[in-house]
Length: 295
Image 1: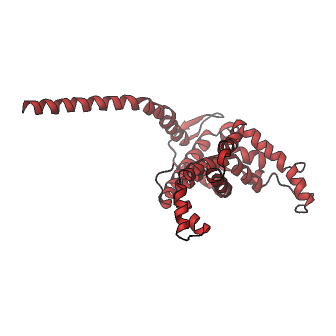
Image 2: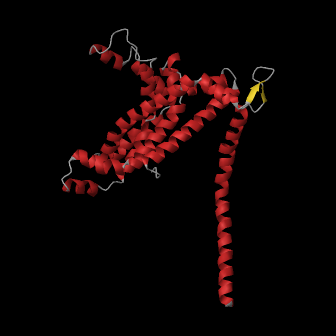
Image 3: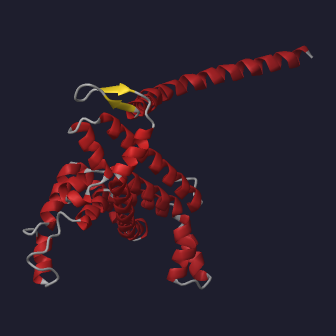
């Protein structure tokens, strides 16, 4: 009996020691979240409820929650435009990245590593420089415009830059690696024998893709679309360089309010609204896709 009591006491002591060790290991991560996530969020909420003070750039805390409705009404066009542009860019990136990831996973052979390096190669260059490069490519002196002009697909007065299409193309291109890598990761895990078994059961290529490949690659599809859609929604660089005043996105408004107008409450309000909207959309999307494991 005494031995059983001692064994239980020893097990309890060991469990407490393990719990203390677990809390100790979690402490740096929890501290990081508190400093760089929770504190900024609380500051954002506090700033969003302020009202203009006596001087320029001065604001008084009034806890005015009506700021959220006023901001949403004032920027509803940019708000919806951001989500529309991000959705279209995500679909374009998916249409390009899926065949690319499939080819790298199953058809590239010894060139697989080289192709993966090429996929991430744009990251070696500044984000802004890549957008400026697209402005030159789409410009009237660029190679793409000259090719289209020679093929009589555009006229000399057509503009490819400063358009909504240019903004969407820039978004799709700049976030394409975020779509390709998760797709490749999921496709690469598929056992080729599974695809061969589908063929042995007299399934054609389309049926095999629809019934086997696509369902097994859904974690990569979900992860890739999220990693593309979320940053594209809040992006302002592409709209600033490739767009015009009629293609302004919510990120441009937030940037201008923070840095130019110095209207910090409005900028904070729009930032918080954008974050909540993305969180809701992402939560619904994950539930509807039936995929909880993203990688």
